[in-house]
Length: 72
Image 1 (spheres, rainbow, N blue to C red):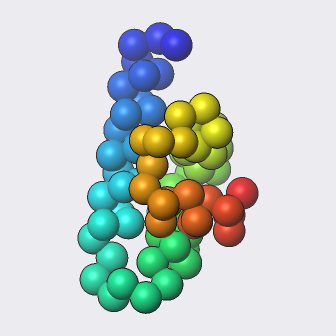
Image 2 (tube, rainbow, N blue to C red):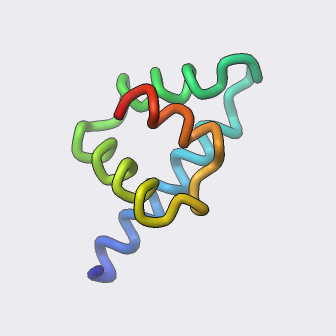
């Protein structure tokens, strides 16, 4: 993996985990994260996040994993 790609992966992981942790209402966090990803992230960003979830699942929070199941 190139350095630029690695940096992009790290950025996406950080953003996704921050979105999950900053959802103010803690009910249905995964649904809210999924909605945010569908609404504001490009298909390419979502595809990269899905690949990250497959390759290194420990980097993403359980809420992000649950959200990805709904959009994958």
